[in-house]
Amino acid sequence: MSLNIGDLVCEGKFRIKCILGAGGYGKVYKAESTTEKREVAIKIAGIQQESHLIKEENVYEVMKSTFGYPKVECHGFEKGYYYLVMELLDISLEKYLSKYKCLSLKTVLMLADQMLTRIEALHRKGYLHRDIKPENMAMGLGNNSLFLHIYDFGLAKIFKHNNVHIGITEIDHFVGTSRYSSLNAHKGIELSRRDDLESIAYSIIYLAKGKLPWQGLGIPDTDEKYRQVYKLKRQSPDKICEGLPAIFAAFLKYCRDLAFHDKPDYSYCHKLFAGLLKEKGLKFDYIYEWTPFNNPIKLARREKEKKELEMKKKAEKQKIEEQKKMLCGIQKEKKKRKNRKKPWKHAVQWRKPVQDHLLPPDLPIEQKRAIVLQAMQSSNFNNVAFMNSTSQKLPPPPVVNSLLHQLSMAYPPLPVYPPHAQTQLINHHMALLQQQHLAFVQLHQQQQKQPAGVQAQ
Image 1 (cartoon, rainbow, N blue to C red):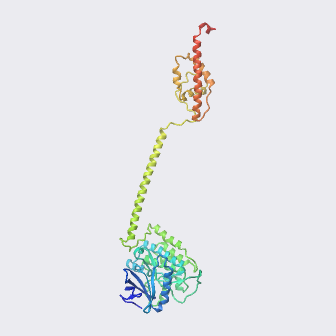
Image 2 (cartoon, rainbow, N blue to C red):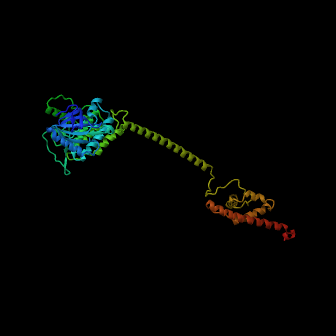
Image 3 (tube, rainbow, N blue to C red):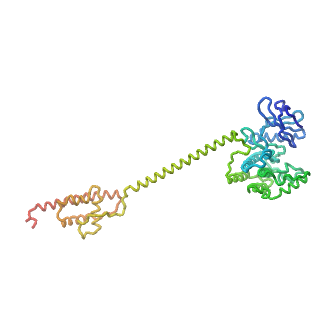
């Protein structure tokens, strides 16, 4: 069943513009709305392929709220064929590969991550794709032009019934496309989630290298071709992924090691590719070889990166300024500490020179120092002034020595106290010392005024 350019479809709502592709279960056309300025994709299938198109429509209905799957607008039957009107996508990854020969490592890793996300969402809904390949994957259009979409669910199958996994059985026909199908598909074993992941592995290896080892065999007989493809696929993952980073072989090996009922660890698979991106210093920015420079999303991302870079530079500059201020503050604090008077120390420091020559020579040094220290540490008494202010009134040195001797005996060395307490005690004792000194001076003056005869007595 085929349509011609200009034919009207879906009760005259859409006009055929060109054919996009054809497969075993129908053809896909690009069409435009007759009432609006927009384009859609229309899949046409004959009566023989009716079941596949209905199955595909059911999958789209289940996945309609999931990102990365084309949205179905309408479907129906007319003029002897079934039609499915859906969201139009960009050209397939296969066509991009034909243009670029092979894709960059960054592009392949970003696509691999999105493939895993899309297939995980499909598995979560209870469906297997069973025909994953670059021809069935494409980028969106408009605001979705940077994101991968998966389509063509003609071979999709439910693998869970009432939350119970289907049993492992043998199938009598080949399912999928031999280039990307799993080893189990070649063996005739019922497919499960592990086989979708193995098909993803072959797809990303193909995108990264531009060719798979079992391509271009030139064998016309289909059965013989399948046998040779199977033989080459049985090679070790390291051999198949030769020339690629080790992550590709590790992913393929992980897919092959899964059991039939196993649920794949999608998170682990994501980490494999994310780790390689980080190791190579690449950014997951959704910018591919084919992304035009003037793409609005690309421009927005570039502007965002520019602002982030400016903010980073500003933050670094601010950090340097703060470090300078902190260093300056530390230097000022050190200078203040250097200029600050040393606090009182518990150990008495003897200051020289000390005027202790007026004290009795036989007086113990501890008592001498206690007397002079009391005078030196007093805030309102100066030992030099003390000695000089009364020098004219004082009796001869022997008398002074006698007086000071009595004072030193009366006031032995003070115990060591904290500076504030020590100051209070010293002030108190020095006040008493001054009172005693004045009393002795007055007594001496009175003795001098008495007659000589009285003194002799």
